[in-house]
Image 1 (cartoon, rainbow, N blue to C red):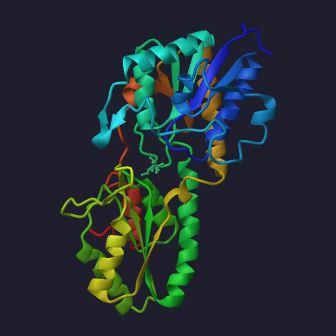
Image 2 (image 1 turned 60 degrees about the horizontal axis):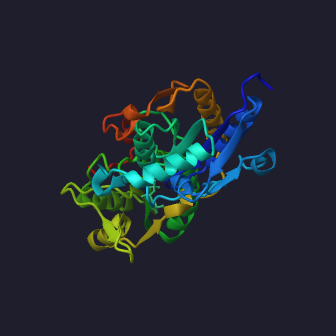
Image 3 (image 1 turned 180 degrees about the horizontal axis):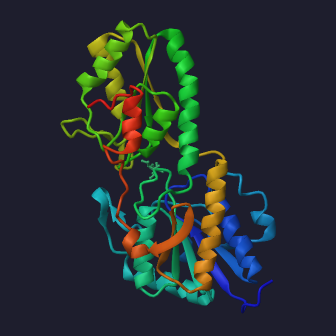
Length: 363
Ligand code: F6P
């Protein structure tokens, strides 16, 4: 054990879960233990700071053993609650003063010298507000969508792409057997990384992403042409946030009145049948992409992010967020990281590669 004063740090997982979160927790626990530090996990994200005394569980050798290879988060998470700092349309909301005061009391009573917040864009906005209110916060970025500009890659993305690729492999055989078109709707609210990578790896014929508005005529043309050329099936991958060339995006309202993206796959499937007569099926992969075990890459990224976060805590570099750049795990100020989305550049090499192998973007 290194010669550092005993410290206690807090950690929480916030926002949508993703494969690799437990690997980060394992990395945090093991590297903190090396320093002789204790790690206290808050349950259900920032919400865990609001219960009297904090809703916490200590991370131990026992409860972090064997978790790296398991999806989800042993701490629980939420993308709702008192700390929500993002409202519809990417607008920011202020966390109420009394919520900040209560959370601050909890952290002081627990004698935390650092808090590691693992989350996406919205959670990093919350972390920034808390940092500005005096919390010793360090951020760890997370999202399967891989759409945070401040880091070249987030853990969870590779696992989500592996899920799409596996689904495509399965859907190809049934599509060919029945001579159908299949529309596969994947996650990706603002950015089409999952659709692009999953579509390329899964041998899609059409990939539709938010960054390249598509035309239904063009998609139907591809299906028609492939039929004429004697191909049995056509596979279309569409990101949930894809838009038509008329700017139309597809959303559904839940029973609780909340708006969620959804419906673009159904609409495309319907239009393909109507325009070409080709029998078409739609498969929405949804939360399958967020569940399950992390890939090797996501485990390694997760461990590395966790270790880096503890090292930032040792340096007392609060307000910093772990960032992956050029194969190195570095850090950037959270303030620079929030609300800078990384979208697929329409003329990027990956898009050009896809076009070069005959994939259409419906444009
Ligand atoms: O941000 C990640 C993401 O997976 C989006 O692509 C998706 O729209 C969203 O989370 C779904 O979140 P939930 O259903 O958990 O609210």
